[in-house]
Length: 498
Image 1: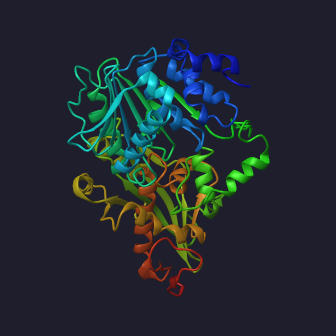
Image 2: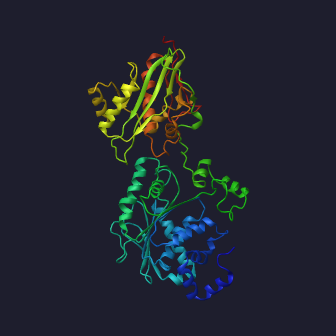
Image 3: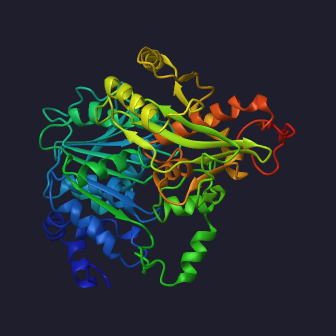
């Protein structure tokens, strides 16, 4: 069904006053009239909802996550800035951010081409002129409306940027993150602080922020904003539109009327991961996933500390440096370790600790752990020793709590990778219940928002393997990267250590 019937379209084509009066009040009509060449399929309900949220308020912040090919960038980044100036919102200075200069240049070309090739739009909005500034950003200036649209990349400074007396009153961020930039915490922090420290202060109290993108990581910019909106710490509306909803209903039946069209679209995608992430909006680890869920092996009962091979209760401690909300957690993972003729076995205990603690509380926690969970002479507490964290083993020693200080080798991913063959081989077993959060962090490493339990786990396992390497239990090593079934494994022969 057409949004604008042919009779009204003809009137609008002939009479500038008719078309401007209609399209000024309605972005829905504006888009389907001036941008009708983009409308190749029946407009979906979710697209109408996006348009409604764009037009209903000049100041309400809006955050949109939608599947690839949904038309979100066409509506939000190409058409809406023009309507925000020409329409009833009367914006004066729109700035659009992209991740790279090449993307910024492409967005500017898309907007300029519309103005150059769309005679009615050019007649109603023009004249315009293109400018570039000392930062390399590009602008279109509309003298008739006293307005400007500027496109820039995230690495370009906008401090003090103005158009005449106007600070940016519409700020649009379109795909300012990608898989690579969200892979590290440093990259995610950089983008978040860029938004809070550079972008938002560039506007004023009534400026509108719109962010369009995808869900790339549990701790990505849009996921942080989603959490802030849900907790009412950030104002605005967050909308998420996967191609298929939870009941597998297609959100755009006009483009994908049957399962056949969806399957054909899926065949065009390079990998299952890309399909899940870009079309179904599921946050999953990238191709370099460290631990796979099918590797996890469970136990129902512990052998117990009377087992002849019982070596003790071991614990790995990953320390946070602060108890602030923004800090990491202090995490402790426990295990029973067995090693006799039947080889080394590590049974992870349920209910690991994950808390936000300051330094005195960390000391108290370790003292309590040592006096309750780890009372035996053979029990061993491994504590990471690096920078600030070196103080804890020293303080524990002062309080009579014995702990082994472990200097980590390699980065977090490497340290977790060193445990992967032990997990896959069944050397490490997990309780059927009580370690869900730990397993989530292991399987979702690089995607999960927190990795403190995973860090404590890798510290525990690698220190345990190294501790028992000399007693003939087992050594596992491999050449480079994350091991697979085809990797070269070097085993030391098992010996009877009784």
